[in-house]
Image 1 (cartoon, rainbow, N blue to C red):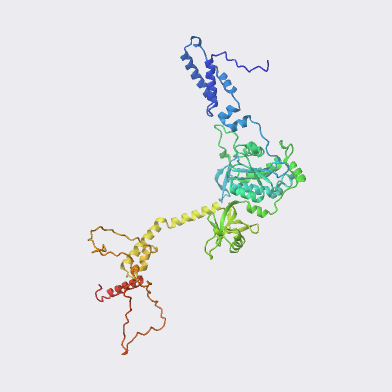
Image 2: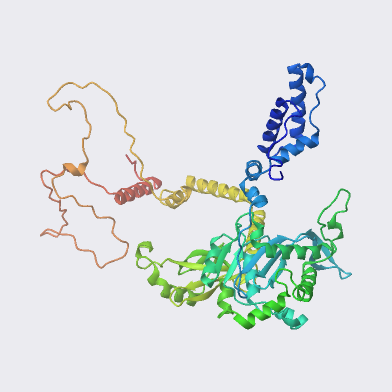
Length: 593
């Protein structure tokens, strides 16, 4: 009897058309994500009264619809994996009714480290560096910081955390990895050994990251692969995959909510704005957070591992040991943004800066010349080689970059060529803003309109000079007027004129049209005529030939019979002739035809 209970629905209370209308209501609710139960119930009521009046059945005149609770039960009775997937999607259906799979399991410390970002539930103030007469600093702004945390999966130990106003990026992830691999000297100096609560550091073999854009970049892939760290990306929209760090961040946010400027978990209407109570700075909250983690979290029993994280961390180090970094300098050098660049004799141009040192550049080019393809090089033998290199840079420091020497397998530091940036550690963003500010100042000092006006005045001055200068003196001015451009080839403008010509044997009677270039019709060897001789003296001039009586004679060149007697004048000779004619005209000597 118990086994058969509920298998057969009792559908005798209302007519069949009411149940059919209820089935339509259920389908209407489960096929639309935005539709609520009250919307489906109201739709049922409207259809119920309309259908009852159209049927006009005397037995159904006083028939009332099912109450709202009954209609809601009909909707809930259809809840299943299929209907939830139809309304909210397959992922939500798996989250609600699917079994959880086995996540990663660590068997030793530093095997897997989980890194995550979250916006902290607190408002912090940003103070000015300028101190007034009373010794106070002005509040510039109120911001919410980002909390970056790294948790050891084996012991739940906090290996590195920090607060920053920078949004999640490759830089924040790299900074967190640096804190994981670096001993906590400041915490040891402040709290002592504290039963191993300040001993969380070491070289990790694997890291779990969010499948977010700031982590799935070439820089992250290249750097972690070069360091020998395996990367595991959590699936999208699945916080349960890294539930340990999510729980830890939630516990940390509970502490921040109790501080001045903390954001409550739920803000009701009429509650005061938490920003009005903000009075702590980034360093103040960092000190409070360090105190809570070292003295409470690491020493209290963790429900997930049933012992304090500091105790399990110490037991794991005794059994498996601690991995450390062999070359901390190289590792910290690689902890930056990666980008391919081109190395030449002038150094490396990157992000608006030139990084160059004569000795370092020469050494890098000598070592890596063998790794470049000859097809990618410039053709000239005396030109510099272009070598593709791998560079790493810290976005917060533009004083230098790091280059991988593929021959020695070492990381080489290449300084900024500009001493103003090589001696002062400023970020690339700051340097870019400073250059933009300087460019704007230059524009205000001498604007584009003023530069254009000066160019127009210079052009008018040149044109006035050209109008009064002689032919020879005006040549250079004419070139300036034309903008210093090279002589360009001009297309010949050919005019075609139709005409009627009387018939003849050659077809050219009465028409004088040159048919070909002059050098084509010549029978002798065509040679370029000699130009004007140099003004330098090359010895005494040869004597003119004389006759027996001592008088000078003129020798006429002998020309072939087929050669044309028309003189051939080159460009320089014609130009010299024009200069001579102009000088004669200025001296009023004769009339020049």
